[in-house]
Image 1 (cartoon, rainbow, N blue to C red):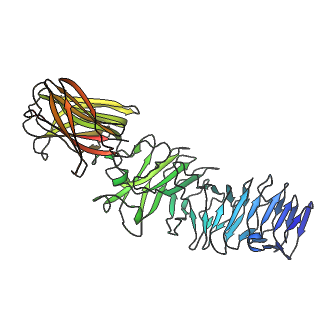
Image 2: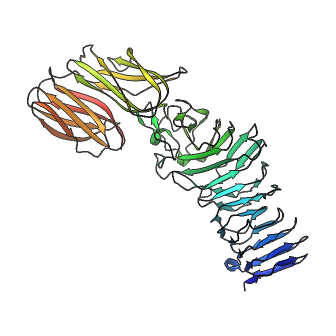
Image 3: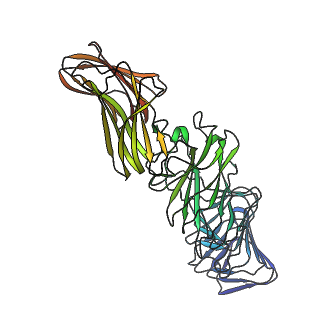
Length: 521
């Protein structure tokens, strides 16, 4: 049966006490020497503290618990940093209206142990206690686990692991480690709900400072485009694909960091091969780390580099600079993604006998200039214009250039973007057919997940709109009658985010328009 302790002081010497559940109703339990408390009874063998109940453990005292630990008292559960609490049965949880600060916490028995309240391990002032996972998984369950012991040995494990798999933009399943002035390799033994070990190593070479910490959460994504993106991230644009690259060039896992003091540790990331859903050649090429700080950094490059794996687990080590107190999501991606600019449109259209090339950016970081390049064969390009960038911007900006050189057949354009530090990247190609009848102007663009076609014609004309996906497959076709003057048509096709080739063909001779556009939901 459950024992209720409601006396002021209950002193336990060198004896063991067994009970089927304990309710500490305001008692002050003092353990001396090698005393032990064994709370048995399986799932009924709970320890519940309330009415300011608390325990003063001895250095070698042990509390062995078969049920759940619940702290509803207005304290952290203990009055001294000493002793060990062992969870020795099957599925067990740590609960309460108040957080518990354990000194030593050891996971034994079977099944998963779960946090239902923020919990600390390592002590309050002595802070030399240890979390021993053994062979057991510990599910953070949207809660924070704080390790107050600054030593790299404050978490031990054999095959046990910590589950931080809450797939939300703000993953609240967090491990915080108060490392202080210490240095060394801090291994957070993360694992998946399926039991795959994916440890994270934070190699600190310069101490953070007294009272300082780092914290981290990690999660896979259910979809291959990394949704939901971590809080604050606005794009994952890929310059080679000229579209969002999260589906094609980014590992499907997030690591969200906060360092209370600025630091550049060596981070070793671990991911599962099944989280590599990148396309060829990215899925077996080199990948590295990128971090979000108002934009993806470093600009169009990665920190660290290692070949991507398709099976088992892979690792990448990178020296990532963290600003003090900044929430910093990181990903592993190919060297082409993401980009320091978020290019939301790159298209061309006839303007009389000339070609109007237009592009827009949603964000820019250290963007020096754009170089517009033209080719007659899609292989050999030459520069035809240089347009200055905005440097840094978080608003929609539009650019354009009119190419007055005659177009015979098909010409190709691409956009080269150059940073202040000289790094550059190049977009994919867009194709422009010969401009149509004099006075005819046709254009296409993406708007809120839809494809829109504008036609200005000096004569009545009938058009066919054809939409091709990025692989060149015809996915939609429809008829568009147009009368003299301006005509606009929203194409009856539910476009997913991506790049599409739109071709508009008129009944009149030489009336043919083709443009590659980007559509974003």
